[in-house]
Image (cartoon, rainbow over all chains, first blue to last red):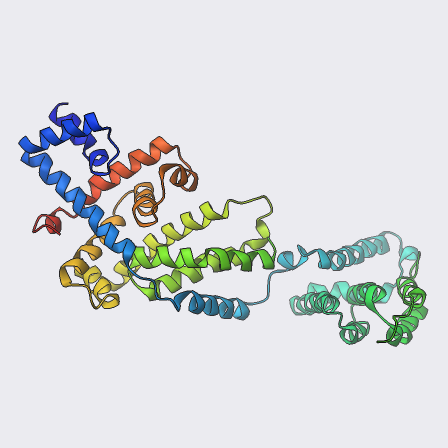
Length: 218
Length: 170
């Protein structure tokens, strides 16, 4: 090996990656070449410093502290974006309800006789044009989904009184799955007011609850 | 990725993220900041991860990158000379002698001057104790490329630290 070749292999030598024959050639060269010897020593010192860096102790309390800081920051984050929320399976219904409302509005424009609830849909659309109202609707839909996850029937019953049809439909659908007799009066009232075509969603929700076998008492 | 999986990742990899950041940056506070930065970015993007992800590679790569960026940024903000690293190491390691602290500081300073892949490979190999196959998976290169990166990194570091290394043997 010539001087240039030795220099190119010094790192491999210092790292112990060369076979014994190649390592011996390097050692022989190093005994005669001060320049390469110095470079090899510098590399070995770098590796020793890295070993010392690797050995620096990590404060045992650090992981718990880091976790607390992270949890706290996440808790303080502004609520997630609409698209983020709607990626949750439980919220897909809510998204569908909003889309349905839009579709029904389009049908209304093309043929008013097909509208299920002209006043409420128009009101929803006008209000959702307003950023603040759109935020309220999003908030209500999220509340409904959270209430469903927590099986919070009282909150879902309250959301049945929302001024937004989308919220009321979402709440009714959730209540059909987890609601009890306490919400039947509110659902019956909404069912009576329903003027849309096709199946009455509030009546269907109330019927589902009535058909559900009563849970045995503890 | 769901919230539950996110929290599992934090539990599984949080310690390693802290350890790398602590070593590369030289302070516990920096390690906390980087831990927060890495996982907060992941939290914000968690819904976008639908396909399987090699979390080990992702988190190692991201942590090393952020740690090197952090040191660079901190140095720029504080407009400090190389002596800064000396004090940074010494602060967290009061028992270390000044010479060792200086060398650690200079190594940190030199690491961030390396090309990114060389710095990544050196950190994974020499501070995390990984072998070439492991490094290749994380960095996204072949094993032979990882080897070349490590050799070059070592040569570069020796060159960058020459003035402090040649004063006296460690």
